[in-house]
Amino acid sequence: MDKPAKTVPAILAEALTKRYAPDAPPAVDGLGFSMPRGATWGLLGGNGAGKTTTIAMLLGLLVPSSGRVACLGHDMARDRFAALARMNFSSPYIALPSRLSVAENLRVYAHLYDVPRAEARIAELAAQLQLTELLDRPAGNLSAGQKTRVALAKSLVNRPELLLLDEPTASLDPDTGDWVRSWLERYRAESGCAILLASHNMGEVERLCDHVLMLKQGRVVDQGSPAALLEKYGRDDMEEVFLDIARGRQREEVPAQ
Amino acid sequence: MNRAALRRIWGLIYRHLALYRRSWPRVLELMYWPVLQMVVWGFVTAYLAGVQNNVTSVAAGVLLGGVLLWEVALRSQMGFSISFLEEIWSRNLGHVFVSPLRPRELVAGLMGMSVIRVLVGVTPAALLAWALYGFGILRLGPVVVAFFAALLMMGWAVALGVTSLILRYGAGAEALAWSVLFGLTPFAAVFYPVAILPAWLQPVALALPASHVFEGMRAALLHGEIEWGHLAAAFALDGVWLALMAWVFMRQFQSARVRGALLNIGE
Figure 1 (cartoon, rainbow over the protein chains, first blue to last red):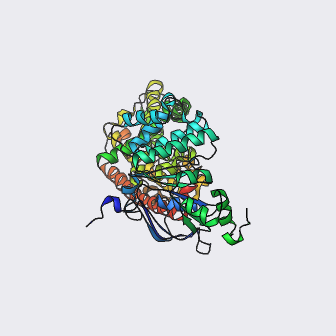
Figure 2: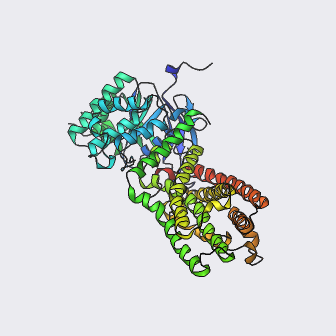
Figure 3: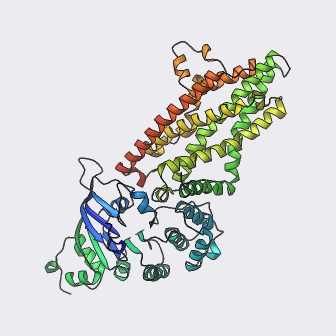
């Protein structure tokens, strides 16, 4: 018998490994975690730690060398399209067609995700994300903050149960970044959507995430809630915890404050 | 194919139609080359044969028919390949490949765009041939629809091969999207019969659906006959080439997922 939907993890990764070449060191090395429904988790690590590779494997964009990943109960090796219809993704490094208007872009993705009553959904998202005035503007003519809001609207068009966000506030000014974080907090509370967030902004991680996976050289080197990690490392903010982990310092090695 | 799949295919076609609606140079570019070809070949045939109702004017029709029908194959291949490249240029493929759009639906959407681009590109050239040189492509009879379809399919098969190379080699293979089918022109019997080719090249020509279409076109124009054998051979070869190239495409798509090429394609 199938497990009840709520007990199926949003993401289940088992011994996930990726090598880009047989003789290359693994970009991701035996990653395993089970992220529950409705949770917001952070995926942290320095450049080259394996965050992008991990997200690409979770999305089915990249085939693991070994191990297994399931999203919303669907095995991504065998049944990824069923999962992809129920999840979505946003990254500032993947653009939307710049010549298309905001409305046209959202309409394209409403079709691709087979969203019912697409025009009503687009209007609803535009109102929520303050995009109504921008709907007829070409996506390429928007400011970084406006593009981020459009990318968020795209990623929410199918009311995803699992949302993967790659640096959602990268290159945004502090005010716009704070607006996006507040919006995500509210959205998660209202929708119950599970969110996996890759970010270099430690304040963002501390504010949004229930649980953090710290990656280094493709392995999880530590994990826990931001509060637990702060206590474990005896630090005041996550940026210091990040530096301790990135530089391989344990608590006893951390200079007294 | 279910309703959701059809909607996803329409989503991809809508994305390109929206692009053309906002970019008149792209629309102009669709018509530019077929019209230019028709003007040049029209004057060449007028010079060589004179536009008269005799055997030489029938020969002129054979040349103009060849130009028009070969444009169908060229525009079909380019319509598919360039629509795929548009996704790369707009750095949008990452979003497309993490949506529920299946690879076969991506291919169907690109085929749909290819048909639209062929109609927009070739129709003005066909009208020009009729208005300036008195050559109506419909004089071939209803069989012209079959010729049209066979050449469209050949264009798709070549485009699947080009797209596979782009998946394999990235931006380095982009130039093939414009040039590859021109390289087949000498073997496709567009302007002369297969029999003109050296004996050792004839099997190569006969392996191409286009050479059967053009043999059929000449039979229709010169003798008013439908060469059913050539027509059947064209469709059979289309089926074989499409199946083979679809297999190559799926292999390269899967290989790109293994190599991580979908993360940075076009760079």
